[in-house]
Length: 165
Ligand SMILES: Cc1cc2nc3c(=O)[nH]c(=O)nc-3n(C[C@H](O)[C@H](O)[C@H](O)COP(=O)(O)OP(=O)(O)OC[C@H]3O[C@@H](n4cnc5c(N)ncnc54)[C@H](O)[C@@H]3O)c2cc1C
Image (cartoon, rainbow, N blue to C red; front, side, top):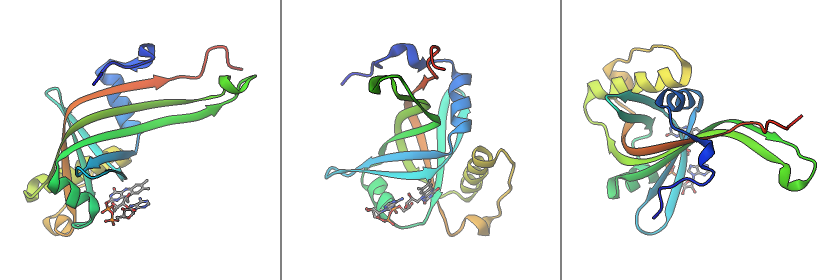
């Protein structure tokens, strides 16, 4: 399977630029598979980038299809995008859309440790709101926190064409 990117000139390679995209995107599309068929579920997320490792935190109900699937197969794929602006052209094939996006793969786990659950929720709220929130034990007792340790990720940006009016 190819890991190369078509339209290589659109690849974003500087980590600070990639993290800026992760700050801006608010919704992660989580791809799961249980061997039967793929499943994609949109979720809010928070991220940490430490020592070259990208970690994502998600939260949600303790039960449901995505939890069952993660327990059966923790290998996941994820995608986030932002800066979506359609633009027009003089002919149909010059219409398009601007975007910035990140895609990657990793391993998901359900966080059991209460301190890490609180940390994950603070990270999520920081990414989502830009603000610092503290969590108490009881606030995280009734939610699942999912941690994804990314094994690889790439980013891409399509700006507005320079010849566009
Ligand atoms: C922008 C956005 C942000 C969200 N953020 C979060 C979040 O941070 N945490 C969170 O837990 N959930 C979030 N949700 C809801 C999430 O997409 C799921 O609906 C929810 O997590 C339940 O997923 P599940 O796999 O447990 O589905 P279940 O409740 O087990 O339902 C299974 C079935 O319901 C249907 N279904 C489930 N979700 C959706 C959906 N979103 N749209 C249409 N059909 C659906 C599918 O057919 C699926 O097979 C968000 C949704 C959106 C659109």
